[in-house]
Length: 162
Figure 1 (cartoon, rainbow, N blue to C red):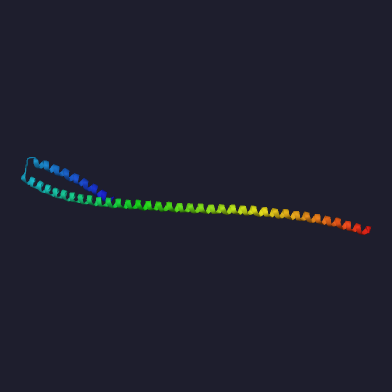
Figure 2 (figure 1 turned 60 degrees about the vertical axis):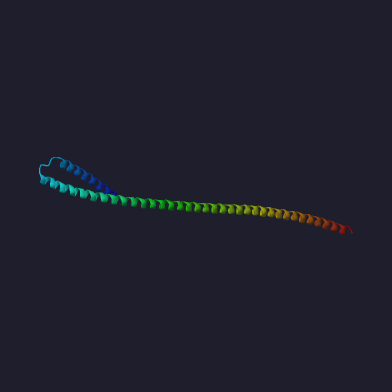
């Protein structure tokens, strides 16, 4: 920013010098009243011309330096954009990877839950079958015990008759 200010200041100085040069030229074109005054003005004009040339050289140098800075800035911007793009690509790939991992994990979890539900259902069904079979066996046992009791009664009655 200081360089731009310096360029602006130099430009203002150039304008002032141009104005003074024009004034001196107009005075030089006017009829000379005193030869000494003309010589002094010529010396002053020469000094102003030298200062103007020096300022122009400085202005050219500053302009060249400014151009170099602009190129460097543009190069840095390009590098920054490239790095930002690479970062964005990396970030997207990481997000995609994370999303895929989450999806796979969720699918595995869903499969495990489904398998657990199937296993629970199978176990409940097996338990119910076992309970039903146990009840049937108890019923059969009761029937057999009842038949045995009837047979014992009949056998005891038959013994009494004999």
